[in-house]
Length: 350
Image (tube, rainbow, N blue to C red):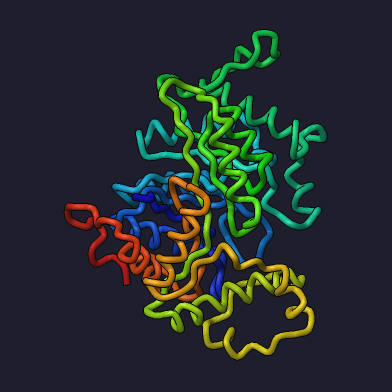
């Protein structure tokens, strides 16, 4: 049976603040905790009006304390914005506080689209998206005790603390065969954002499996397929729920980023010529939008085509109640088993 997980970006919506979007992350995590999802990952983005998840390392500890079953992690920590030693120590600390429930997903982008924000992170000149990133990744793995650096490396003696803790499972996130090869060489889990590059996903996951080299005894390849999924009460309901997110992505492409409109406002929105032109750049081939049956069939087809071990779902809806409802319907549609025991958050959610 395919494993299902959740990737949250703290989507913002018209009439509310980014701070409110952050607070709603906790409500969503509490909601999906007993539904049978394996992971709840939090993205890292910067200076994007449509999402507010800027500091996953802070949210992870909070969410892990607010839930009891689901694994909590980053989707992902963007290494160009961070020092590898700092990331290693943050996640060793999180693992010490929440043993067996933390994941470390890492990525190679800056999570920002404007040059000024990228420069504000003071990215080192030698840290390009290729060899510079791979040096950072190797340092992170070495400091966390996963793969040692060469003995002659000037940082070979560095070990992150606290001692006595195993670095959580590390996943490389990407959307190209190059990132798949990087994950395979280092024996990492691999997450592919299919909505970013649907044409490459099958070949990338096949390459990842073929070249996988275990980092630690017993390690096996684990491929995660990232999809955008919205499950409505029926197909028409799902398409309506999907419109605010789709329009927000289109407007971002058209150079007018901002929070999502309500469903009603999005459906009656008068599209500009620039928005019509930008819509062609929003690829929906890796989306699953529909009622429970259509969404489940679409996901099953994508899993079969790619051979993914796991699906991680993003569902950015305007209304938090609708968003939680979409995840509830998804869990039922794909046969997830509600976890036994009383719900510790019964009565908390609206």
